[in-house]
Image: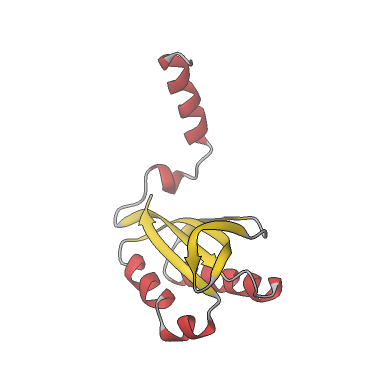
Length: 127
């Protein structure tokens, strides 16, 4: 068990590693997380291009301090999606204007994305 004072000090040290905009976003901005589950059958180069395209979209929407986290290894899902039991999970964390979430939702839910079947699921939340 960790003493409360020590835990608070450790937590303070951990948050100092975060970008300043995540700790205290500028006025009119919020910190968001977007999790995208990609089709495991897609080529790595295609997936990399889609990840870069999404990062470019975030930049175009005014997002700052974009962090991308993923392992290029299929991970088991809790339930099958479109017949797939595994997927490539990619987490984007960023600070963006408040209206960016709606634009991201529209982009990811566009019929062209659904037709390509490269994105199995996605979700954007405030961090």
